Image (cartoon, rainbow, N blue to C red; front, side, top):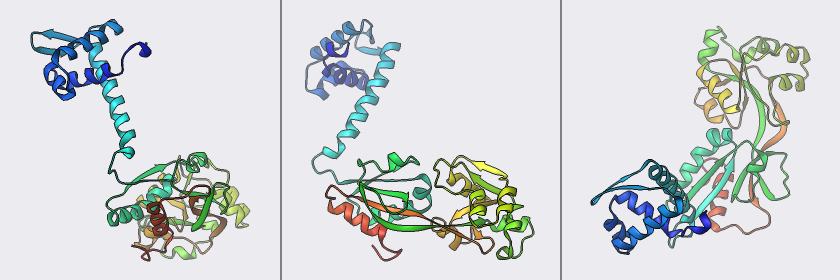
Length: 304
C-alpha cells in the first residue's frame, strides 16, 4: 500500500493534525488550504477510511485518524532525530559503548566532566552486556571486558580486574563484625552472599572466587542469599546493606573511598581480565574522539 501513497501526504496529514486547521497547515507547508484538503482526501481514499470529522471550519480526528497520527508523528520524530548529525552546523556526536555496570559505576561521571569541558559535543552512550553490541564498529569508542586483545579495536588498559568481598558498614554492624579484615574465607561463606547471573563464561561469581583461591570446601558451602540478574543490581544491594557482594575493586573505588563499602578479609583475586578502552583499528578517528579517548585513559585528575 505504501508504494501507492505519496510520502508528502503524511507530512500534510501531520501538520493538519497538529494545527487542526487546513489553512494553518497550508501556511506551515507553503501550500494552499485547497491543496491540503486535496491531499487529505487522497490519503483517505488510499486508506479507505475517514481521518477527520469536519464540522464547518472545525476538525476532529476519527479513531483511525488518531491512531495514524500517533504513528506518523513518532515516525517523523525518529527521522528528524536520525538526520540531526547531518544538520549544517551540528556539533560532533561521539558514540561510546560500555556495559551497564561500567557505565554506572565508572564511566558516567567521567563523561559528565568531559561534556562540561566540551560544550559543543554530544555524547551517545550505548549500554549493553552483549559482547557483539559492545564491539560493534558503529561505535567511536568502546570499553571491553577482555584480556587486552581484539581484532578490530586497538585497546588501552583502564582497570585490571581484582575481586574481593565488599559490604556496607551498616551490614557489618548488624552482624556485629568489628574487624572485617579479620574475616576468613570460612567466615565469609556463612554471611549473606549476594551474587549475580553469569551471562559471560569469564565472569566470576562467589563459587568460582572461592574455588580459584584454593578454598574448595568454602566454594561448596557458598550459597548466595540473593541472586540478581545484573552485577549492578548486586552492587546496589550491597550498598543498601543487604549482604556481601563480590566487588570489582576498580569499578567500586569511589564507593570504597567514600565509605559506602568496605572490603572483607585479606584475600582478593586478580583474574587476568580487565576493562580496556578501544579505538577502531581500521579507520581514522576524529580529533574529538581522540580527545575523549585521552581523557578517559588518563589517570583521574590528569586530564581536563
